[in-house]
Each structure stands twice: as C-alpha cells, then as structure tokens.
Length: 311
Image (tube, rainbow, N blue to C red; front, side):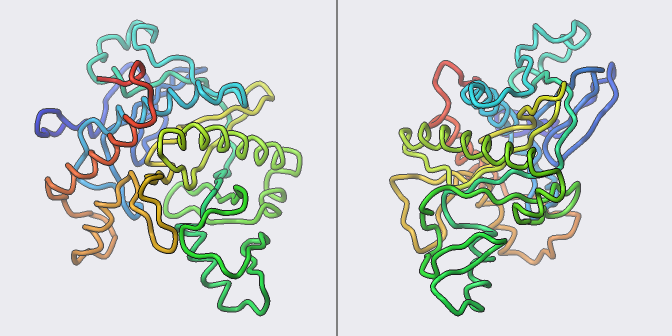
C-alpha cells in the first residue's frame, strides 16, 4: 500500500493461497480452479504505462460500478459474476477481507474471446482521428472508415445517427487495433461475430438510456466476452471510467473535445511535461491525483444507486 491523504492506495496484492493468474494494468487476478478472484487495485495507467502513484479508492469505484452494471444488463446476456460479497468467498480468503472488501469479485472462469467489442454513440477519440484522415482522401459526400460509411460533414463529438459497432484486436501490451467487422468475422467466425455485435449494441442502448436519465452521456464503451459451457457470457468489467467515455449531458457541446469523467487530468499533465511516454512514468502531483479521483467519483455517484454505493 501507499499512503494517501486519508486513505491508502492499494498498488499490488499478495494472496498466497492461490496462484496469480494475471496482473493487468489495474487488476490482479488469482486462479481458484473453476473460478477467478479479480481484485481492482488503485493502479492507474496512461498511454499504456502504469504510473507509480495510485488513486486511493479508485479500485473500489471501478469494482462497484461493474457489479451494478453486470446486474443491470443481465437480462441481455449472462455474465461471469458469482459474488462480490467477501463473506461468500472461500474461507481461506476471509483474512484478506480488509483488502478485498469493495474492490473484488469472484467470477466464473471462461475462455476469453480475443476481440474488444467497442460500441460508439458519438464520434470521438480514435474514431474521430481515423475519420479526419479518411475525409482528406474522400471525393464524395461520404467517408468510409473500416468499411463503415459516414456523412462527410460530421464534427468532433457529434452524436451518430445510431450507435455503431467498431471491434478491435485485444492486445496484451500496447494499443488495441481497430478492425472492420469483416475482419472480426474472419477471426472468430460469422455466427459468433454477429451475436457479439447484437449483444454489444443492446447492452449499450440499455445502459445509455439509463445514464442519460442521470444526465450522463456514455459516448462510447467496450466489452469483453468469453465462452463458458458453450455459452457466450460477459466478462472483465463494464461501464467504468476506465472502459467508457462518460460526458456530462448538461455540458455537452459538439464540435470540440468534451470533458470526460476519467483520467483526462492525468493525460493533460503528462502531455505538458518532458516525458516520452516510455517507462518509467513520472510521479503525479497530488492535485492531479485529487482531481482525477473527483472525476471518477462524480461519475460513480451519478450512475450507481445510493444503496449500491461502497463507503
């Protein structure tokens, strides 16, 4: 742990009873046989590099949001969540309850499908960059990006006529690469690709409608799916500031980048200093960490019902 203002940041975990299955940029995953223990640490990354500082409480926010959303969209597709109640974990994990409480999930082990299922309701981020490049070479009234046709008059952050599905490769390190739906079909088969596209769009629509009532725009998001007993299930985490672009509906102004409820403060700070975006990353000032946590917490408290909020 690393000391914070009132709370300590959890940067790594050490569960000795079970082997470490994976350690990602944020999550530590332990192998419990037919299940996995996923612990959301307070690590934070930017430009694909894990930063030395942690944001105290960030892991609890991410975990709690996923638990809420898994339940909310469970009528569309089953998911891997077994429980987030530590008292229901195997008994030999109870001694770690101080670490696990609020920031962990016991989940079913599934075979991951190596595709990022990205849904976009607005044109922003990497799609906007690809669109701008493609528009330079366009000769007509439409612009084509990864075989998806757009009008040539879109502005940055504009709402699309309807949400679109833009898959990406699942990279273990570095950036995921945007691919066409046809490339996805070639990779995993037409039937599975069509199913994942349909489920992803349905999940996004249900969550978007809910969030918009809370004055939050889910501009885009990404999902991961797995196979368990020949059934497709939703895995990993969903609709958190780490996997989704959240904007304030009240402050939305198309034609420019929008303020996001995520780690934009960190990105802006790192862009302002002399760092080449290669490890090791520099430490973050306390004010940048504070503002970043405030953004995460604002989205959390806006979207998750009060009775589900982790103290």
